[in-house]
Image 1 (cartoon, rainbow, N blue to C red):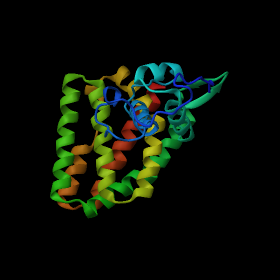
Image 2 (cartoon, one colour):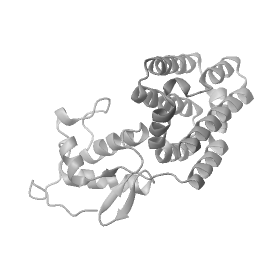
Image 3 (tube, rainbow, N blue to C red):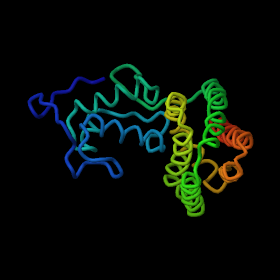
Length: 235
């Protein structure tokens, strides 16, 4: 990464200015954590596209923060595989190869249906209602052709379901996988359009209502298979 001189005499800011705090993120967190969460969301929701280069200077201007928190956030995201160091001080969003998609599919199938099964065992009526509300927003994004809204609500649905499963180790592993293929979902939306993106969320919610945990796992497996197949087609 590029070495950079801090304009504040090397002092590290402790928090982002209120005006620069990204929407939806809690105020009062250290600047490096706020920057990390914002950049992580941009990866997950396809704001950063595969192959896109990101620079410390550009992000510093964009987020109105010092270089140190940006540098720390980028290091964390590279460690998680969300970004990669390409040499010559260049950081970019990875472009998935066919073998990458196959491995991601294999890992997701191993983990996400089990999380759906676990969520089925612990879900309350309130949890199910929240999932339905998220899915309604997802449907609206699809109807309007709102790609960003689709990507945000789709991830939100899966993240909420995984939280219900109460399996933080498995959920952490799955979130790491999503960081790797999130940008590619933007490519899928560009090629197929939001109306042509199938999901099995309604089947999954129906299974949760019935307490049919195996059906929930099957619905999630189908959702994963469909999504990863479309990513493979978009390569």
